[in-house]
Image (tube, rainbow over all chains, first blue to last red; front, side, top):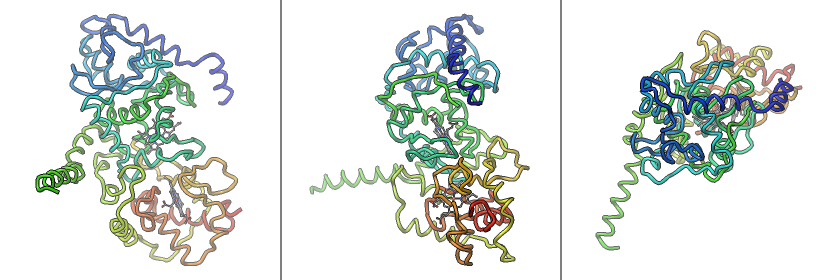
Length: 241
Length: 202
């Protein structure tokens, strides 16, 4: 297992293949409207990709709500390409060992275009501030049969679950180390995983029902994490165990 | 302080209190239920907080008021069920397996499979096991250090049944109270902690 991991590192991050897949998708004409996504406004202007990930989630006037990259992509696929949002988000995450979904591939490529950029998730618009406050509330919200909250596992430094070090996501340093490294290629899963996936999987470990992709709770949690991470330097897609 | 200033201060206070009141929390929670879907054994009812869960959801570092803490601890203590036959210790071999098992009650878990205790996620237990978490204190040598007095056995059973009896906002799951482990499983875990032959005490 470990030698396999090293071998992979030696050959470069497998996420690079997924990034290439995403780059092609971005400019390919697709959907009922047969248009490329490249007119999509990711927050820095139509078609601007460089640095976009580092300043998401943010408020989008055209949609009237705060969106992270993955939610925004699904919205643009609908708006620009005419693909139904429910079809795009029905299976947002790939099955272990299979090729990345369109959303994953696009996310990997676009995140890669923020490498070296300073995380600067905006907190100017009232809805951005509200998303942060709600994300913070949810982070501390204890529920379910195990009484877990995100904070229970992620609010102390140098604590572990088994041998896995738990990041303290309430500090700038801890949040930045996490935020900068996603999306990431998970060696243990043989797949590229995104921040939306991370939220969904931690909600599962929290013993809660299934967190819905792109839901207000998911976007609020990401706004809280992202804005807490402000000042960190993006370095994704990363590689994780 | 002028009357107008007082009125302004009071209305500000009312505003602040209103933001903290349970009514606004309930409003927010509609958006919470809209963000999850029931899956497997995890229904939407799991999003509803108990009084303890609500009281213990303040921002990191915020302590619950002393009277609230006392109330939570008393309710937890009153709910503890000791085995009718008075037998608190089972088989340590089985208990070891329960302590190692991390699955249980997740939307992805088969409800027909017994839940694990996942003690190793948070505690050191047998010194020979190097893969242990640190959210809880080390329990290595537990029985050897503490002995097997009736009071110690009852204290430990209560901790496992509902740790909130001693620490209002404990982060240890309520293994008995929330029906995560059965009475028999708790007996086995108890034996894993106390039995002189258990690797915990080696």
